[in-house]
Image (tube, rainbow, N blue to C red):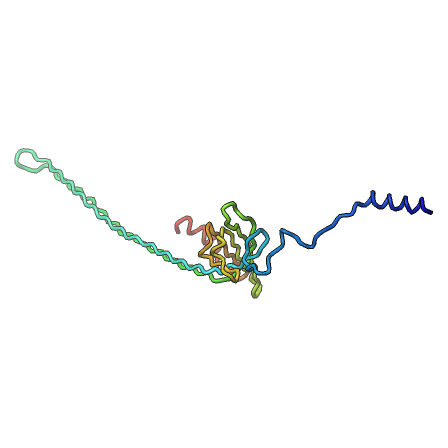
Length: 190
């Protein structure tokens, strides 16, 4: 009996080494007095997007050209032949384009990478479906930790190398696009 107990004890201690694990995980630990700002990969950050752009371009062109050429052939005191050539041209052109865009939304993104400079590379997508219309906002860029508020918010105007894409899909979006044949006619200049 003693031999069996000794064999079981030796087998148990050599076959399954005992390891102690801590409840503390360094990569997920946050101090009790720490703020809730995003600062490492995987953390989430809320971005308030307020983009308002306006562009206006106009051009006016006016040109005028007049050329006169007159020739006369005379023999003695009488005129044998006379010709006149007048060339004139006018061009007036102008155009104006105006575009206004406005995007107001709130998107929660995640920190993808912390750069050596301390900046956070963020990216995320938000999809909303309203009345069978899918609307998707994709946002990515760089954020300085100092620009993140205590509520873990950052303004879109504080994002460096920001890229904001807003796409809508559905019946309303399809109806607002020009048809293929209209784009072809416009390209041909008709």
